[in-house]
Length: 154
Image 1 (cartoon, rainbow, N blue to C red):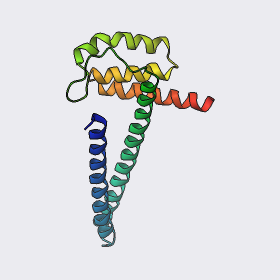
Image 2 (spheres, rainbow, N blue to C red):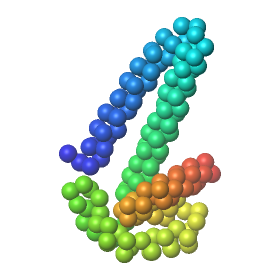
Image 3 (cartoon, one colour):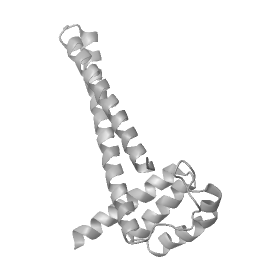
Image 4 (cartoon, rainbow, N blue to C red):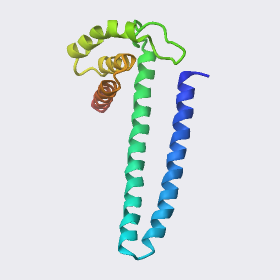
């Protein structure tokens, strides 16, 4: 089973469990709202608001996953994926030491082409290989924004 397939299965299971939680919280919220007691009503409102925030966050993360996967697929189709990160291990992740050694090249490429989504996507992939998830996500978000702007300009 490929790494992508395992990831998709994991996302599907976690999303289904989260939606199930939202349903149970919603049922409990309605029950609290119908009591008419001020404290219970306040708790019911909170139980409705929190799942709404959770649903928004889930939607945002799923959209990020779809968009970032589309960019990686496009890089792969153009044969532009970083190829100097070493062999992927059993988890599908490249060797961190090799990624650390290659990092400066990708950072400099993104700095040299700040409007190019491909350089930012490649930098995000390398950040991820270096286990810097925060910067990886930021670089991929930048790539998504730049690619969308480029697509709209066409």
